[in-house]
Structures are given as structure tokens and as C-alpha cells.
Amino acid sequence: MITPLEQRIVEQVRVLRDDMIGFLRELIQIPSVNPPGEGYLDCACLVGDRLSALGFETRYVTATGHPDHSEEYPRVNVVGRLPGRSPMPTLHFNGHTDVVPPGEHWTVDPFGGEVKDGRIYGRGACDMKGGIAAALFAAAALREAGVSLRGSLEFSATVDEETGGFAGMDYLAREGLISPERTSYVIIPEPFGPGRICLGHRGVYWFRVETIGRTAHGSMPFLGVSAISQMERFLSRVSSDLVQALRARITDMPVDPPEARRATINVNGITGGQTDGNVGSPCVADRCSAIFDRRFLIEEPFDDVKKEIETLIANLTAEDRDFKAELTDLMVVHPVETDPDTELVGTAARTIEDLTGVPAEHVASPGTYDHKHVHNTGRVKQCIAYGPGLLNLAHQPDEYCEIEHIVRSCEVMAVTAARLLGVN
Image (cartoon, rainbow, N blue to C red):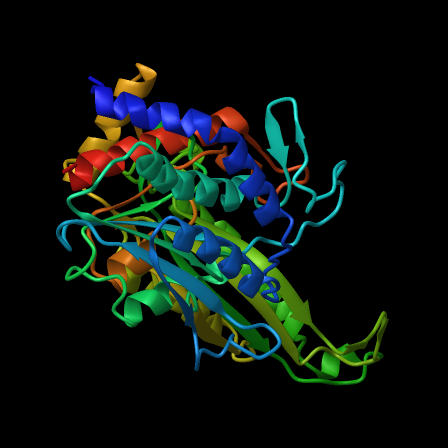
């Protein structure tokens, strides 16, 4: 049931619609491509100026000392706080400003922010500059509706989510800016659609396997041991043994699409042998390296996940004295899931149903996002992803976001904020 005050908030979102889309166009037009991390300062300043204009206490947080931070590509985050009558509860909106490279096959300018047929196009329109605009203008709608919040509202625009978020949301959490002492709830407006609440994500284990051979002249390969052939054996064993086992494991988390409810493994890349440009030297390859992406379920202990890879290597080593391989961990992110019975999830779900007339759907993400840092580093348990756009459009050519999705998500986030924080 929408109250008269909440109806006024919704009406203000509609009034701000054109300003919101104009801001989003400006944000899309900054090519904040990661890697390498371009345009971060410009994005932070654009968001920071808006926050300051809305009365937020605004600060810029640079990930000084982080290995990805440099003078050429500074890792600059922006954080704003709008104090309420009480410091707690605090609702924190967070969005990432980095986008993946545009790639090819676009029919529009990937950094043009073109608006046509009720959609806004561009790299990041869906993932997730549209969500940043919706959350930021939720705060603007509260202000324009004359709402005075009891609790406090925070907003951050952070970097590097597409490559792990360690100079972004993780850095804020390590600096104490996301913590149980100052943060009650976090909403990350990732593109799951205006009727869906994302409760968490699967885990990820990135690792490298390097097979070690023995070089010899390419005309006499029998005198050497090919690391590429050894890698072929390892990949074959992954396919024949591990992949089949993973297909039988299904999580109870509501991961969407349903095919991603199974545990999976992917070969992200492979290199080997001695090459110079397009010309290879006449040698048996003595090194071959492959990067793997193992997505594991909340029901799978990580120690077991890693042990399976170690066992594959050990078995091949036992079968062939020439087989040698090294395993290196690259990144481990544990699965996270917010309890659907928490106040944050319940309030957001009621707001969605009140505004749309349709019950909210609970989902979980096949890939990770910055929820992992909120939960694991910041230790804040009430976190959801909720925002405009369709996940299957992320990272695609001609990426777009429905403008009505942006408006509706903005309405839901504004009213949810008022309900969670209370109104004076």
C-alpha cells in the first residue's frame, strides 16, 4: 500500500526523468574502460558533483598503495553521506563506474549514449551506469519530495568491479567505510531488472595450471617432452572426469539462468611453446599454461574444490613419470547469499509489489559482483543487488537499458530507502 508521501516520491522520480537520462548520457560518454582503468577520475567527479549538490558530505577515496593504482590510471572512488536525524540505520547505495572494452560489431557509438525507441545505448548503459543513475536520482527524488530521513543515506561509485573490485568496494571496506558499525543495508543496482532481487552469487576459483616439458629440436620431437601434449592430457582428464561430476551438482540457490545452477569449469585462455609473432621456433614446447575459471556452489567447500584439481594432477603424475604440472591460485571468491527473511529483502520485495502489482522474484547471480566485498570484507550481512537492465545484455555489442526500467527501479529504490530509514 503506497502512502501519500510515497506517491509524492514516485511523482518526483517522473519529474526528474529527463535529468536522470541526461546524467546517464554524460556518464556513458566517459569511456571508463577496464582494463586498463581509463576515465575513473572523470566518473568520480561527475558523480561527486551531483552528490554535493544534493547535500551529501562527499569525499574522494583513492586506492593508494594498491598495485593497480598508478599516476596514469588512478583508482579513484567517490563516497557521499547524507546524515539523517540519527547515524543509524544507514542505507548504502553502491555502483561501479568501470566498463569492459566495447569490442566489435556495434551499430551505434558505444560511448555516445544514444537514446532511441525508449532505450539508451552504450557500453555500461546496462552494466551498470544505468543503475548508478537510478540510485543517485532516488536520492534526488527524496530531496525534491521534501523527505527528511531519520536514518542516514550513503552513496558510493567505485572502480574495478569488472576485474575483481579490489581497488574499489573491497578497498572501501578495508578502510572501514563499509562495516557493521556504520552500514546497515547495501543495495547494489546491478542489472537484474526492476522486478527481481538478487540475493547473492556462486563462488569463483581462478587458477593456472602450467605443464612443464623438455625442449628438443622440432625435427626430433621424440627427444623431448611436449608441454602442449601434456596440457592436452590434462584438459582431456578435466573433460572426461571433472566436467561430468560437476554437471551432477546443482545448487538450491535461485541462480538465473537455471543452467548456471550447476557447478562449472571453463578454460579462459591457453598459451604454450616458443613463438615470435606468427612464426614459431623449431622447438618442442617446454612450457604450456592454461587459466581456468571454476564456478563453485555454496554447497561445495572450497577445500574440496581445490583438492579435485590437485587430484587430477597427482593421478596424471603417477601414471606418467614425464608428466609435470604446477598449480597456482589466482583468485578465490566464496559464494554469498543474503537471507531472504531479512528486513532489507522483505522491504524491497514489498515495495516492488506495491509499485508494480507483481510479487518480487528472488534470484542469484551466475557470476560474482561486489556483494562479495560487502559480505566478506565489510561483514555487512544485509546486501542485495537490485537495478535496471537485463543481465544478458551486459558486455554485448549494442548494449542498452530500457528507460522505463531505469525509472521504475529509481522509484523502487527511493521508496525502499524511505521505508528502511524512516521519515521524520
